[in-house]
Image (cartoon, rainbow, N blue to C red; front, top):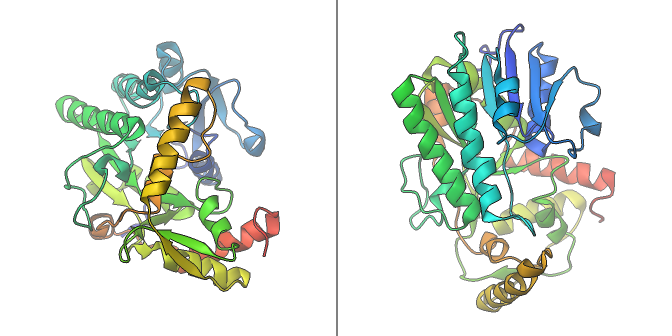
Length: 340
């Protein structure tokens, strides 16, 4: 069960974060399947890659009550994908607005639509923070480690309680690390495969990482919007198994014709450097060249049990992790984003 379930062609779907990497992939799929798409976007958002699509744009901020009310009127489904990522000059208050306030406004607006069918809320596996004993499942305790994770956790907990109290049909998706052609956040990992020597930080074992290709993730979003068993559920969206970071880089290297040499180095100097960079750059509104969170990316295990997604919703993946990594590496090469 899974592939035969899809949104009716006359459905009206509201998508937040539509101009981002994941959101743009989602709206393209929805439009191709005949769904009427409405999207909230700031005036400054780059919509060039979506101008060929029949999207009804509602201009403004996702945390503006008037914008949300206008955008939500008459929609059947809401895909709340919008997120604020760590960047220079972004205040803690803005994280709260983009993650928590927008969720509240959208959920309250959804209740005003008599025929509303499903709210798909996109959270993150980051709400679990550091996983001490991997793999973690959906019931693993929350332990957010930064403002991004804390506000995403707050938003998820709020809407789950709100939905239960008001009988709002809700599905929560917690994506693992999202990648695929066009992504820039994990591009750094692909670039590492072009280095003559790749440093491996920290202990000699572990450093498992969980990935999800954007194509699979957006299919999961759509499935969560229509599957009866998704109502009231929380699902970690990741590939069936995690992969060691060294193996990820080896696969990329093999695809681009590079033999990878790894050298293990202690992690603590990088954490110290990141702390100094953040303390100096943040007050000046500058982008630090290195973050503590980015260093942690290369040192901690992020392994999850994704069985619930397969067992309860019957999701069937479109590609293996190795296939997705090789495909993405080829795309980066073709675009000149990485070089052999």
